[in-house]
Length: 162
Ligand code: MG
Image 1: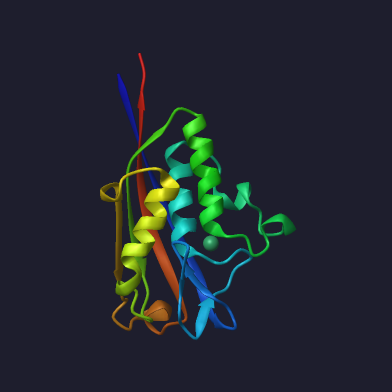
Image 2: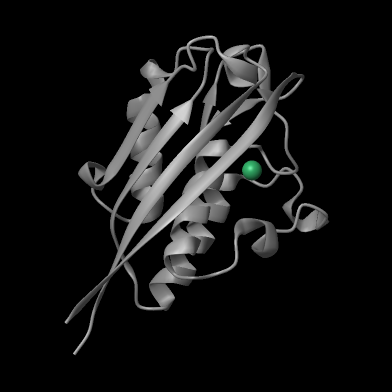
């Protein structure tokens, strides 16, 4: 018997000067970075929430509270690794994940390969199981004005049992 579960994640962070831009654990050269208690990695945050949601677990805000100094400047790719360990411990395997990042600037295309590599390694799955796309907001709204970035993610989890 095979049980399938799907989960949805979403996150948004403001872009500010004086912060590093980290997406999917990749440091991307840009004059602004995402503001957050951790490294602000909006990709890892949305992905974690989709994995947790598929298991019916509380979201990353409850797992890694922003007022807990333990997670200050935490590397979100490491937090993703913790979430993956947790869900695997509950008997879930990752079928696939798909991610949609919405960012006006900078051009993310040159870094997509490395982001997928990082994510597939941390998830412990093949690169073909990790979808990652980037689009702009066509200049519309706060994301379109480059005031921040947002990200959507879905995850499919698989459990095989008797
Ligand atoms: Mg976040």
